[in-house]
Length: 148
Image (cartoon, rainbow, N blue to C red; front, side, top):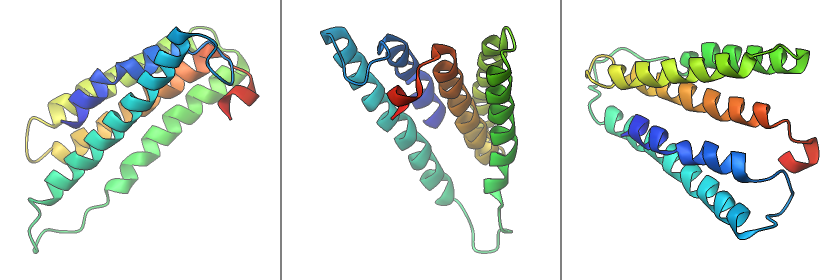
C-alpha cells in the first residue's frame, strides 16, 4: 500500500514542476498543480503510516526490539550528498538522484512482497520517495523565498 501510494504520488513531483516558482499561483493550472501537490502529500504520508500500523499489528510480545529509525541514516546521507553536489554545481546530479529514488522504490516493492522484509521495504520506499521529491525540488532551482 505504501509504495503504490507513493508511486501514484508522482503527481506531487509533476505538480512541483508546474508550480511556476511564484509564492502564490498565478493561473488555474498552477492552482491545480498546488492542489495536486497537497493531495499527493497526504496520500504519500498516509500510505506509509497505514503500512507501518498494519505491520505493527503482526508483532508478538516476544519479538526482539526493532531499530527501524536507523534506516534513516543512509537516506539522510544520500539526500545530503545530493544537496551538496547540487550546491557544488555537479553536472547530471539530478539523474543520479532520480536513479537512487527509482532503485529505492523498486527495492521497496520487492521488500513488501514478504512478511520478513516488509519493514525494510517500507523504509526503502520512504527513502525513495523522499529522494525523488528532494531531487525534483533541487532541479527546479527556485529562489529561497518560494520555499517559504
